[in-house]
Length: 132
Image (cartoon, rainbow, N blue to C red; front, side):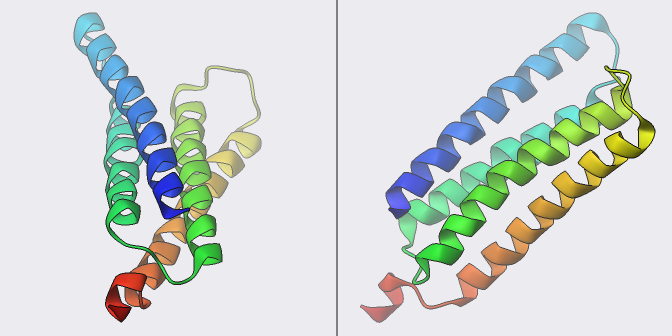
């Protein structure tokens, strides 16, 4: 199952990489930098972090599969929620209320923070490799 987690995270990381590169290309071509914060977070949180976690699941087999599953899905949901909420908050592409947009931004970031905390727990737990 861990190989599946690795592949899922890798695929989402690739999608984030493409979106981040596209936004960077757009900003360079348009000469406008309205997307700079979103661009940076998409690349750091979406591409690099999810990629690093994909490598972790390829190299290690966490002892607690339920915690690993929770980590993977909070990582994906949190990365999408944070960067999507950030886009809604900073660029206001739709006429959504300020309270709703702020809640989406905060909830996405909080889910991602939970994912980071779960990853810390996983790294301090015994893995299948530790037993060998």
